[in-house]
Length: 321
Image (tube, rainbow, N blue to C red; front, side, top):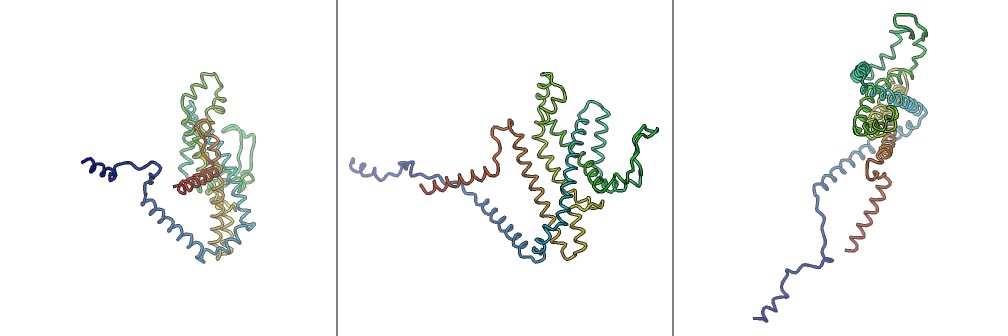
């Protein structure tokens, strides 16, 4: 009996395998691989269609992309965007502070302004300002219903550039006001109480404590507004200002066979401008996230380095096994 038991022991398979021989297999995700394959096929089809369709005339696109006419329009687009973004943000800050003021007059005026310019289409604002001289030939500063101290000729002041910048700035200030107000309200109330307990002046509290913290919330929302502003500059063509889109429209009427390459050139420049703004947004958000996060978000270069390091470690692990 003992011999039969002893001979049966080596046949047992219940003993665990050594830890070094065990291998943990990752969980399979077939649905993810199938979805990725479908997306890659669709993207490849789109790229193939863009590259091989003669209708796009890529040779003419290369011709128009860096033409002086297009670059001059691009420069006007940048100027209008820069001036309107700065003036719109400053106006938005003032309107937001008025909305948060304890004065009922300031709150009411700010609310009416924001309501009005968020309701009226931008093209209507631009056309109204473009024809403003038909309503008021002169502008004056003085006592209401009394004598005027200074008088201006509106037709000389309202150049095409001024009309475009003023119209875009008025419209942008209404949207920026709500972005800034939301950012200020996102700051914890304890920060306001702590600043007041220290006896700091109201202006110092806003510029040094409240507003820097609000910028973490303001930045991504206002950058969306800025990107919309870049594209919104295409409407200044209707007030006789030849920006990027206006230059494309003008050249398209002269060269009707090149309409598609001209539109592609404008699209490429708009993509470049919005991409640059998005990169700036990332680094501004990263800067203002200091102190709010335990570690700063990695930059794109750091992400690439981390990915390569993880890939090398995985390859070495697979080779060792």
